[in-house]
Length: 349
Image (cartoon, rainbow, N blue to C red; front, top):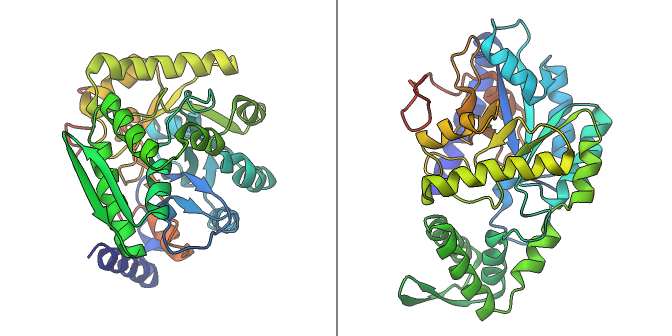
């Protein structure tokens, strides 16, 4: 059913492009694109993170297309300025990357530098320190390797048998949702139990997948790169007590400012969907001194202060889609119907 829904959504977006609406009815001041992994396409049918991956070739095509369509490619400071002023004639796109994975500097940065375009990377500071837990990678490796998976879920041991890639994908989605529903301490216990059972070195896996401080220093030296914060440990803030969530924000900012000797002005909520943060976290981000906080809730940025800077929408690009026609429809804003802000993601001001 999910794959059918994706196909229908792609068809709707393609038909929107063919109707010509993208050229006639652009909405808002601009859009923020969100990417995670940029790396060459890999073989294998079971790739649970494929939706979060694009190739360097697609990134190159996308940037060329945005330039051809006369979009201004801007950094997050400029996004904040344009969001509170009168709408300008040219619309903008901001390029953002979450989580500081190693492939950003290996494969994305050469493309971005060659084009001379600004971009923002949101860093969870535990990961370049080598102590962050990329639990989703451990989960994926276990399921990829095993046909029988058992783990403790609450007080009970659960056992699953998976015989093919479709069943493995379904199990990954089910367990990923369950793990994301846990408070951070319980999640760490659960993933440690799973990885210990199947001899997965989660610490080494996480270190290998993340940029270190030397990598990040190279990016920080480029004036076109904006370093933002994604907290310390990249937790689901909605599963934490308010004081702990506030510490994640303030400590992530403080560690990054110390590491890069500059003000860190921009935050991305970890995971960033409606289930992962609440209205109170929007307020906390402003109180912590961030000029903006980005979500992964789909939408476009309006001008004249009509978009909350501390709950910015972003378009999370699905790496299974390679259509530039769909990209143009999405960044035009016409794919997103105007909605009234909900109390879960807006401040009281």
